[in-house]
Image 1 (cartoon, helix red, strand yellow):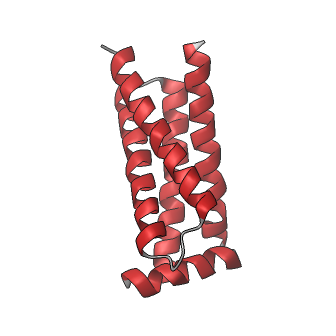
Image 2: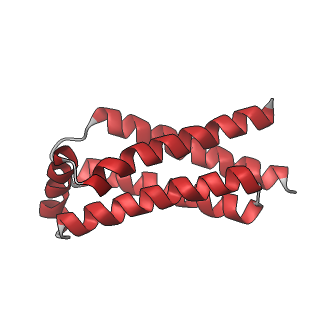
Length: 128
């Protein structure tokens, strides 16, 4: 049962990260507009930051996929540490760079951060 729960968490992380990476990488208007808000607040080129974020999110989805298949402890720690750092950064951007935080994005980031913490704890326990 624990293995099923762990794989469901892996799948959730993979799907959500890929889902959010695609509009950034495809240059969808809503994504472009959102990153323009960040450009004004953090003074980083919106196009560069959008692509960097999209590539990072897609890379994260691939990293979690690799961990889900390989069960390699080191890859798992890297993947879920990366997810936690990404979600903390997303929350910082929502609260400090966006004129008004988007509640659904905040909720998703908090849930993914909590799942990352859970996975980091279980990876350590499973391999000790």
